[in-house]
Length: 449
Ligand SMILES: *Cc1c(COP(=O)(O)O)cnc(C)c1O
Image 1 (cartoon, rainbow, N blue to C red):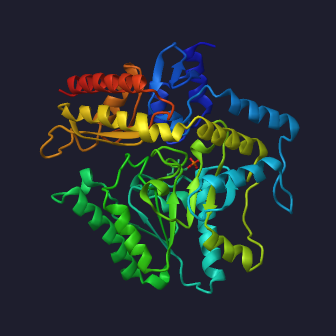
Image 2 (tube, rainbow, N blue to C red; image 1 turned 60 degrees about the vertical axis):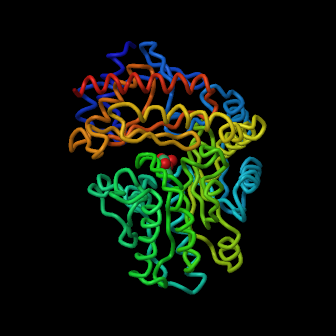
Image 3 (cartoon, rainbow, N blue to C red; image 1 turned 30 degrees about the horizontal axis):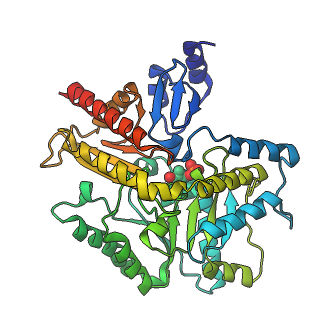
């Protein structure tokens, strides 16, 4: 079948996620047919450096046959069995143990799910169960942040703080959203350091307003991903830690993007020196080769739910799917044996930081920020006032198209361009990425002039 036939069949029957169906019908889809290393290739043979690791998940790129083989071997041996009713499988035991080894501090327990969204739903259930067993049934409210992304189930989307999503469903009524630590967009006249402290104090203010005895947990991504790679000012997490230390409130870190090496440490919690009670993971845990998610649970919390008895009435058919667990084990093996994360921390991360920062001199870039293997560019009409091109933030879409034309996948979140390249990217490929991004910026400036 040729491209236009495929596009027509796509249009007729396939409702895509997070998509304007009407627009998609008009423009047609890009059909991706192959991938190798850090590159994807479409049906026209157009080869693109994948600056987004698929959807933040293919951290080791696309050519890891060890992972594919591990999945296939498992599918031939035991394609499925559940872990309900006192059953278990060898891959799920092995992966739970491997995760306990790589997770920070006392995060020694894992509940498996099929995705990040499901894992955040599981967190809601675990948090409630914990406080009930602690005889504190009034602790019900969960504090999250505006513009956070925690998935797309009703639970995940309620925890998330994206206004566009909230307009289309009825959110759970026990979740409150506070200021996000987005200095470029919302810091005003404050320095980044001042603003980081201010955003963390908003948590304290909210807790006091609601009453500490009513607040069950605070959930946050270490760095907001889908919200626009919002790297909090260095003062933010230490101040949040101070606030949380004053109260008996659980910390949930949603590590779905930053887990498994993206900051140059195993988890964002390691990078920021935080000790969460729950840690959501998904995406990169299997290098995107098989759906798997879960939540890491601290001993502090697990001791209560394990110790006090009574069934935890929650789980998914595909919790700890054996083939998914084999994919996770193979991924962790590669991360460890090839020192991938250390290389991001010591070599490619610092190199990306240096090269990416050069883009700040471009006439339409208001800020170029990066950390580990993520980066963002703020597109502006006027650098001094940080004024955008228009209210609808259409510059981002233009820049995304220009980037693809130039052979680089960048994503647009409004007028913020974001990248999260595979962790296996070489310094030479970082050069290629930055050069292509600069060409995309030139083309965007010309198109918008
Ligand atoms: C992608 C994402 C999720 C949701 O994961 P799914 O596997 O798509 O359900 C949750 N939290 C964060 C931070 C994410 O980036």
